[in-house]
Image (spheres, rainbow, N blue to C red):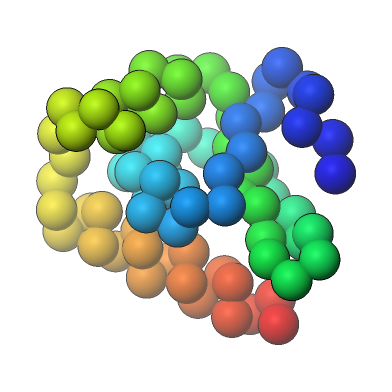
Length: 80
């Protein structure tokens, strides 16, 4: 796995990935490493969303966030 690409943002945190999706950050792919997956997103705008997410300042529509959590879980189970 190559996390040095400045055009990509990686996370293995499902909730963080759902927040990025809900903010409109495009998911590029899932990338498997050992016994887990990385969610890979476009980097544009991701740092701002990530900072707001981890500081607790991110405001997002709950229904869309919940739908994105389900979408990501479905993607993970489809990969197994």
